[in-house]
Image (cartoon, rainbow, N blue to C red):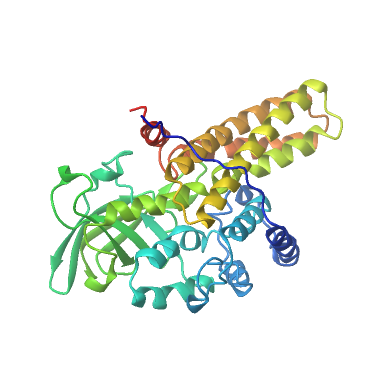
Length: 385
């Protein structure tokens, strides 16, 4: 019996990718706007259309895509570098983030030529923004239990149902929705399809979901007899489950799954000063070691994507470990700062940062798949269940 195994082959970024890093840093030094402290935690939800357009003008959105669609035909390793620098510097890349990370990738792989020609160039220019329409209010973490139905009618579909946790839907142009086009609720993976939804379509209602920090980033999106043209079907009808699992590999594999609150670590080092005690230095060392391990795992994923592989199980593991790290960090940082900071003014500012990061930490469990679902995927991938 062959025992399945996880693949995280040792991998180093090539010289050309590190050269790109220097270009990105210079670009950010020149163009990065002033950013409020709370926005530095949310590179991929904090928006600046002007920044997105400037990034697109450099060819760094859709960087791996074919030039015929506005891409730069560079490697996934180059894309990893750009993503890492945006996150590390707290850049406001939220407008184009989902479109670049997964929606455009999905259209590139499964979309029609008309869809690709119409939408991908606009994404690469930083002018077209997407939301994810997967989760539903009554489904919990069970994505396959989708109830939103798209019934064939005339030259399209009549859609009814509700999506939730739909980031940025109140400001974005499109949503890719996972819907049931045939069969019944209990059919699980059968009869699911993905459709491209213009969020200004009549019958589409967007309501805010306010998070613990009082910010409006998520939404509930309701479809009430919304008519979606047939040419908005992505891929083949009934192939939705295969497509959505492919899409989730892109969502879970990126460094945002462990760098979202990187700013906390940087500020902690600053507030503790240049000469921390041995105890504090040891704890900081463990935090950095965990971060570096996650980073090396993510680099390996980028290498696998570059080789044309689909590291679904490996990406699930990185996302789970990244969630644990990001939820541990705020509390560890707060305790260290309160016990060892020497500058009271710096400490007061840092505690505000720690408080905010603690409030947003629960969301990490949900984003990109819940902890329980991800661990189940890893267990099945290893043949343990």
